[in-house]
Length: 141
Image (cartoon, rainbow, N blue to C red):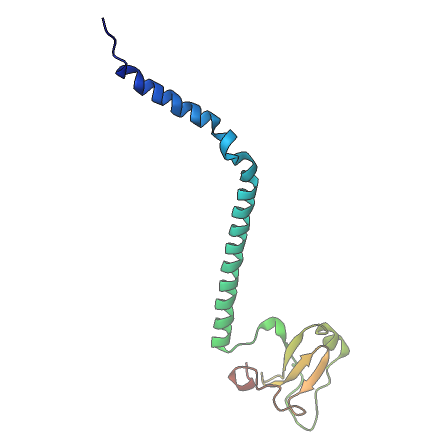
């Protein structure tokens, strides 16, 4: 009686593959590389989120420029003053101090640009003619 050894080849191959799977951490060091991989994936997702935010900010900025409206937070309106080159507005120190670290456009009661507050100093368009030229819509709101 002869026995065929062919029938033992397939189970032997399956057992060999199983042993390779069990021994693979010894050869591949995946355990020590996993924290680095997770950190790189987290960094990549954060960068992608920042890119999306920047794109949205650019779209918003372009839309604001297209409409020609200044940002509301960067404007100050004097309701009791109409533009006159003879009489400059009297802006209280509290208003100037509010914009000590930033800059703001100043408008009169008719929504005409009369100047700008830069670092707490008021610059009139009558003293510096180019002050309101940077504002879209030729100095109106």
